[in-house]
Amino acid sequence: MALSGIQIFKLTPKKNCKECGCPTCMAFSMKVAQGAMKIEQCPHMSDEAIASLSEATAPPMKTIKIGAGSEEFSLGGETVMFRHEKTYVSKTRYAVNLCTCMDEAAVDAKLAEIPKVDYERIGERMYVELVNVKCAEGADAAAYTALVQKAAGLGRTMILECSDPEIAKAALEVCKDSKPVLNGANPSNYEAMNAVATAAGVVLGVTGADLNERYDTVAALEKLGNKNLVIDVTGADVKETFANAVLVRRAAIKDQDRTFGYPSIVNLVALAKGDLHLQAALASLFTMKYGSIIVMEQLTYAEALPLYGLRQNVFTDPQKPMKVETGIYPINGADENSIVLTTVDFALTYFVASGEMERSGVPINLVISDAGGLSVLTSWAAGKFSGTTISKYIIENVEPKVKCRKLVIPGKVAVLKGDLEAKLPGWEIIVGPREAVQLVKFLKDLQ
Image (cartoon, rainbow, N blue to C red; front, side):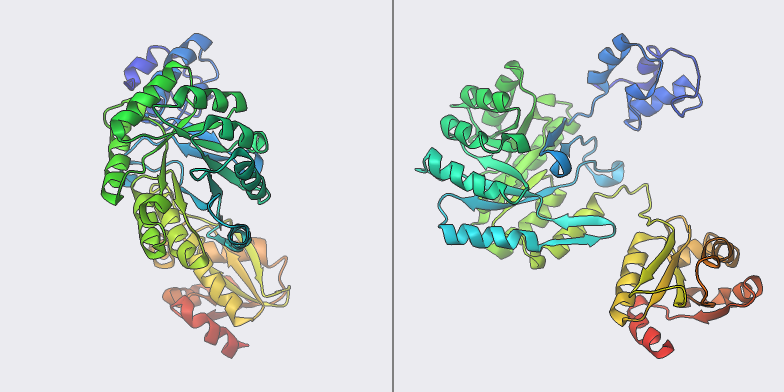
């Protein structure tokens, strides 16, 4: 059970030193109780207090690390059922499925397709992060290990979907350094699978015929000392899988039952094999409710563009604006003589506008000043995108670097034209279009 701020305060050194960033130890304790800070952020907390508090104040859903190096990902760590209550912590990760039942040509074709989805949206890389390698019934260790080794060539984190401990052990010999997930522990094999996963130092996935079996297997693995787990909630059909995902999350968050406090895997190949449209729809569903890893047959741009957009919206902190860094962004090979265009630092505005500017082919110096991460009209109404703030940024950061003295402002704040002309002598202030989609024609005509 989580501790209250008062209970945590009793174990603090009560120095009110402010070194943690809080004005008092009581304020620090309240933030720890809310999950906004960690016990370790107090530099004077004793080891005994940290040890006694860490388990009680840890998130009800354990944070699990998979992968290695640049391909390491965090799963779990969630503290709320719904995003608006606070925020979600670890975004859903997507895996493309390979299987020993596929012929070599099909495997090669799929491995060649996976790297093609790799782009950036609002400062975040969008790509296929995981590869699920399934050991089909009847496959031997040599065939499965060969497929795992081939998949490992992509350099992506893998999920080894295998319930045979001997085959799993052989496969891990060629990929354990990349820290894959071994998904295949069940009531009949969990002891042997636990030994294999523990020896390799990898995360173990737990499955079963129903939630009761999964719960009992997780509890048994915890008694063996293994808490490096994920739970495969995939059921016989969509309805059962959805119920499993929700009940596991609810048991961990609402009931504080740490036996179910682990990230989840949803395998859409098992739910809708061959139906790519249904898989795309289900991927959206389980991104919201509550898949930590979602396995699909394929993930092309057609599926990725809306899916990653949804994930980015769901897993951003609703209490923090999405901002880009302030600065001068040269577009289409712009130099010091290229025209200057300014807008706010709200990430969506920046990426939409910059995309249209790139499409125009016109060299532009896009200037982003601090507007609090708000949209154009909102930041203008709040006084964060005004004649004063824009002119100050232009004088201090743009004039020393750019010779062109033409400045285009968003059409929605045309009212700033006169103020900017007064505060930026020598500059020609041009009112641009109201919508980003109109930028291509506007810039070509301006040129």
